[in-house]
Structure formats: structure tokens, C-alpha cells
Length: 219
Image (tube, one colour):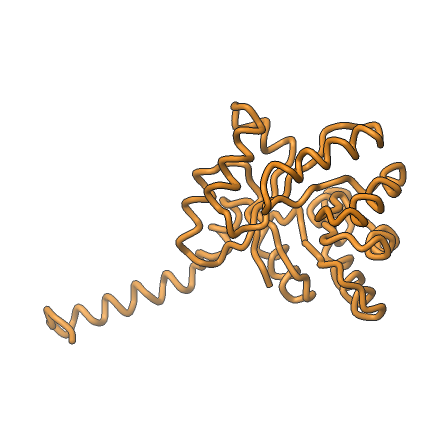
């Protein structure tokens, strides 16, 4: 299981790198817009700060021919970039062409098993099923992860499952339990999932009990 940070904030990325648990970053137009600086500069700074990480960068054009051209330009910015393209039918031919040209593709906004299967057939590097947005409309979003995992294993596809739109510890738990290859999660949500009340209470009790020994130095 790999963990990606879902953010465009370089400082958040640099903060988490020493933990050793971060393998990549997913950005999107929304997170880039929140940083208030030139997007290309932001992406280059992220790629430079995390050269060993896989950095997903999403296209912003809409017409297929422009998406193709922009995807090529984005891929050329740095060696560790994967290009994100929405899972819309009008981009299928573009995605196929880019894959044939050895451009790493992360197909985003995947919501169904059928969509996931088609992208696996095209040979993309990643498919990103969105979990939280299913929950927003009262559908158990995590179920799709299990279905996609079974499909990928059944047919022997090489495409990796990148669980996205993870908004809670329950979402991350489901991504891990389902066998997703990667989970991408916002830094603030990841921090909440890793801080557990019972762990903190246990540490406090151990320290309290140790203080009763009166030992000033150990060992």
C-alpha cells in the first residue's frame, strides 16, 4: 500500500516527507487554485522537493485535441509527473494515444466498475475511484473499491487502484482493507487518522506509572 498526499501545498509535503510513509502527491485544479501562486511554478517546486515521489498533475483543457497537447506538455515538466485526465468518453481516444506514447496516466473521477474496467483495458497507470463523493449522495462509496480490486485481479490488469476522495479514517481503513494499491488523502485528514485517542491515553498512563518509580534516568 502506497500513501499519496492530496495537496498542492509544498510545505505540507515537505513536512510529511521525514515520516517515510509518503510515496507521492496528487494535485488538482482546486488545490492548485488555493495556493495563490503560478501553477506551473508550484508543480515544479513540488517535483523538485519530492523527486522520488510520483506527482499527479491534472489537465485543465476540455477539447480532446487540446487535452492531448496539454498532457504532453505537463508530462514534459518533470520525470516524476503522472498526468491526470477525467474519465469521460470523449477522452478515451486521447488516453489510448498517450498510453501508447508511454505517458503515465492517472484517470480521475472514476465512479463505476464499468469505467474502471475500460481504463484498465486502455492500460493506464492509475485509476482513481472517488469514495467520498459517493457518500455525499448516500451511497456506500467504499464498496466500489472491492469491486474494482476483484475485477483487476480477475483479468490480470496492470493498472493500479488509487483510492481518492478519502475524507475520514473509515475511508482510509476501507482503502487498505479492499486491497487498493494506493490511497491519496489530504494532510489534515491523514494526521487525524494517525492520532488515536486510545494510543494517547495509553502513553499518558505509562508515563504516569513510570513517574511513581522515582527513577530519574533509564537505562
